[in-house]
Length: 164
Image (cartoon, rainbow, N blue to C red):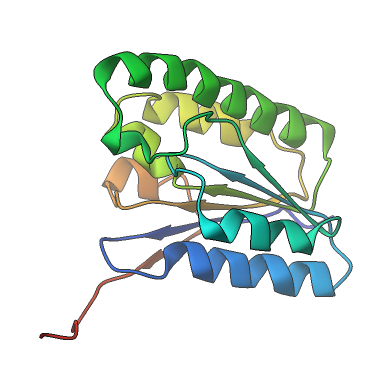
């Protein structure tokens, strides 16, 4: 039995979540079970499209607001933090039950940046997995302590943007 890997897609460049989604599609095409839990993102146009990938790729979002977390008032952030913690608990359940072959925690590193969870809490979550589950974490942060949790770290940076 081979141990699953932990991969981080980080950096301030674009493409981290699409890269993780690409891995999800490849895994599903190989007959694997995939769960994606999205954090800190408002409901977007992509949510309804991504639902078309079900049942092969199951997608969850626990926040209730339609807006991104960084656009919420302090009061709304308190409420959403409870919902986010429910998402973390669900992720732990998925990992302890071995419910999927690949778990993608989209923008989970942003939870650390926003002080919703700590690095030790993230480590505790990762330690809950069964031996075969692969995990992909996405977010901006590439802190050395976070990178130590992974088997592979890919850093995304934008080299050029179209100037008008």
